[in-house]
Length: 504
Image 1 (cartoon, rainbow, N blue to C red):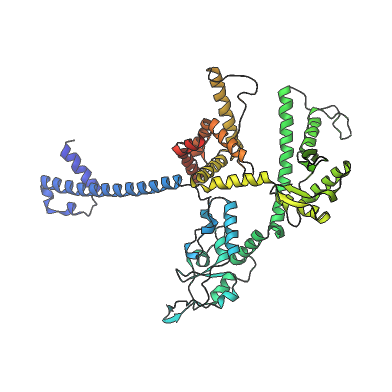
Image 2 (image 1 turned 90 degrees about the horizontal axis):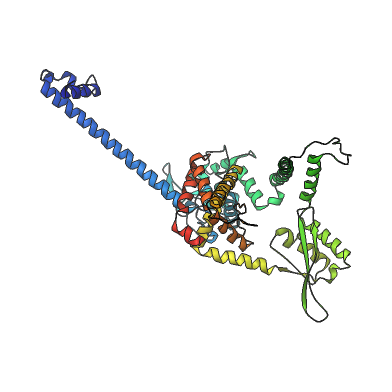
């Protein structure tokens, strides 16, 4: 087909049947027809090109924003003294990363109380249906957690703001939680929002706030605690069975026994091994008791007098075991002149902690917070006062959480490490010997043990390649787009100079 005819056929297909080209008297002239249709096609092509450019620009801006969001440090480092107080300035609670941080922010707002203008504040008028209306200060007395923004001149409910994003299936309440309410001519709307049903949006948030401030009195928390205990017990049983199975398979031993009844003296390898491991699990909680005293020559001595196995770590159980230990060695609680523990609540609790139980029996046993524990907390707090160091450890914590989020990812790190070590040993890059090339895993850092931060960083450095492979896997196969973007952002951070500098 000639080029002119080919172009003409394209133009005809793009034009509609009612286009001017179909009815133009100039159709009798092929050259004019071709020129007209070529012009129409060029105009359409130009429009399409402009649309593509706009679409590309929009995608580029969105992509740039996504990259910026990924590279921006996560919002898990908050100065509680600088939290915005006016409701119009607050961020959504869901913008803060992690349930623990979100609950801390909620507690801060609850302790501070609702935002209200000072006494004597003149509330501005608003014309509603031709009538001037304004907020009434007495509404604060009737509705305890009502707030008023001086910036947007609207009302908010503090409770509803704190748990707006957590009440699943209860929408339509943005007026009091996000946008603000200024329908001052309909004050009954305030009571309508509270509702009369116990499961209304507002009443549900009130319950959540009460449970947050008084967790010990919450039935839900008590049930969740019992659920956690049950899950932990099942997990112990499952891990015990798996460990026993692995050992017997590795040694090529039989599982079953001739007599597996409860009263049997030999129930077989599997059941006997499970019983042995169960006893070890039951004895995992231990309490070390150290006495500090002055001898006859006036010298200060410290002696470990016992390592006691305890069934649980409650204050009453610990106190009972201390009494038994003291009775064993002929010692008396009345002779104690000081006691020191770390910051755990079951130890230093003012009312029901071990400290309080001993003080009730002996008022001279003054409590001193462990200096080593205080030093650890001071080191962590001072180090994180530096913004760069604080951001670095926040990213490290996020990296650990992502890399250890599932058993599959842990196995990937272990298998990758084994393959890498075997390859390096075969290539002569690593030497072999006792306690060399041990299997390693990522460990979370604890604020009460500064050495754990060093251990975490050392593990990240040695498992750098293996962790990178796991992040690449999550970036491609992550369960959600958010997880994929998170892994991609961490991959970018691993290549950042700041990370390498801080690791070294």
